[in-house]
Length: 293
Image 1 (cartoon, rainbow, N blue to C red):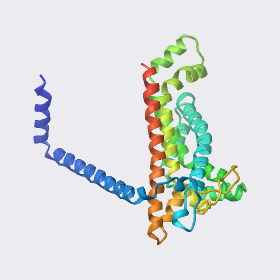
Image 2: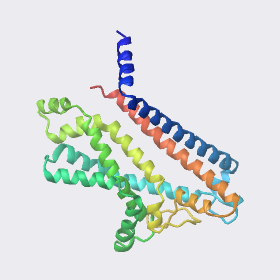
Image 3: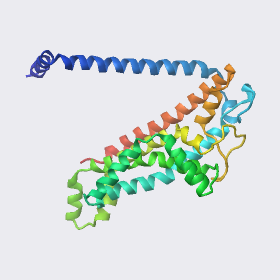
Image 4: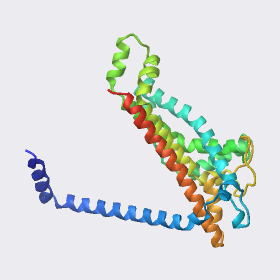
């Protein structure tokens, strides 16, 4: 019995040699991508490790490499992702709940769904130009933390909506039917049954979207974020910088010392991204065990 599937797969491979070739091509592409990634990481670690120090984390940017740090840009990135999360999570999850649980299956819903899917694939620089025209100039927010956070919220909002929709679709219909059978309203069913069951998927999508926002540089350049900031922003109306912009500025300089600083800043950014991804995995494992369908 155990050899039957293996014999069938061998017969299928002989019958369709193209499938074997396709598998080899996919395996080769995977190996090449992983090799390139490992090579890049090794290069960044080799160049940036000597520059990792407390000075890097506690000092502002400077023309002298030995005195330069990422404190201003690091705090600016933390400001950005915090405000972006507060803006896009309620709106994105609320939109997903409405589209999945309340909106009727009509041409209007299909049109909205198509536009959301298209917006998720729009280059981020387009959102940066939109943020420049809408938030910086029309609303008069200037080159502030709030303008940058609103622009990043536009970038990741379609991703949050799609991730939340997929998580809501994964909830079995039997949970909704059992709740309705006990006399619960639609809102009670969504709030107390469906949303808790979809919480691991929703939070995972949100954290991954915020991780993308943390690494975006093009929209911030478009809205006029500074590359040199010698202070920590204390309000949403202050000017700001971000780690991707600081990395770009140092990498574009001719001095080799600044290239090492850029690699060290990349390592710090990677650590923050790994922490966010680890948080997504932890949330899925923790809340996934509590929910048994």
